[in-house]
Length: 151
Length: 210
Ligand SMILES: Nc1nc2c(ncn2[C@@H]2O[C@H](COP(=O)(O)OP(=O)(O)O)[C@@H](O)[C@H]2O)c(=O)[nH]1
Ligand SMILES: [Mg+2]
Ligand SMILES: [Zn+2]
Image (tube, rainbow over all chains, first blue to last red; front, side, top):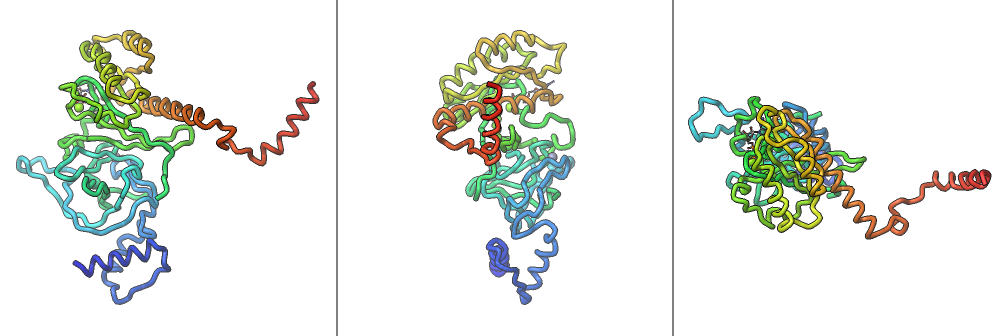
């Protein structure tokens, strides 16, 4: 886990500081995964394209406005099974996020009421969500790549 | 990080319980999402980005989370808000009469120059209507506040109402800015090269008319 984190930091530092891209062949495994899944979307550690709602195309983030990060989080499913047990919240594990430090960076977004120390993010136009979450301690927001589209 | 917008306005939805404030903020629809995780928790506020005369304006729009039931909306809640949507329900007489009380509450608790607008919501329910459009208009004239009837259900006039409120806030701010530093001194209107070139011509032409 520590090594992963260090690599991630290195990866971001390299891109954020616009250091010429250095191929670290020894770490090819991890780097390749990150790069290959995201080279279409991520550039200089940021979202290369506009980030939009999957369902109604409402613009959530302007291009180049958020930092790409990887972290494992449990996020409630957008559509909860109607046959689930009462009070149960179905979640899935999500690994890739756009990190938004200032909420006013968002173009259009909804914030739910608080649940513990989080607010969930939803589309401002069709209310689909969660497309991510907001951490009330740090005041930072995280948008799940798997819950949005790029264009 | 560089600021990527020109203005940020905090707006509130105020009015009696049941008039449709939450529906105005939460898209009123019977599609699959409304029985989803998000609808069970509810929306606290939304951020929307609009373009007003070439300026990028961020609106942060807040719902009242039931405090309105007990009229416990106090100074803390109004803090920093620049615009308030006063909402009543055209099928509910009491909610209309209470607009006056809400205005008083705002005068006592909010900043004196907060911009206001009155919304007569649920105008799609014509058969159940108790408050005529004319009465809404009269009230608005009395308080010198803009007014429009809306339907959160049919998305009628909701978006344009927010544009109107935002435009009025922006106009007020720009007026204030101009008053505190007149354009001639602030350099807000720098003379462009093209203007300078045009000037002698216009001066000449004026002279020739004389
Ligand atoms: N027909 C109709 N019903 C509405 C409209 N807006 C809200 N409602 C309904 O009025 C009820 C109260 O709405 P809600 O948004 O919870 O009001 P709030 O208490 O002011 O937040 C709900 O049943 C809504 O479905 C509207 O424009 N037309
Ligand atoms: Mg409500
Ligand atoms: Zn959407």
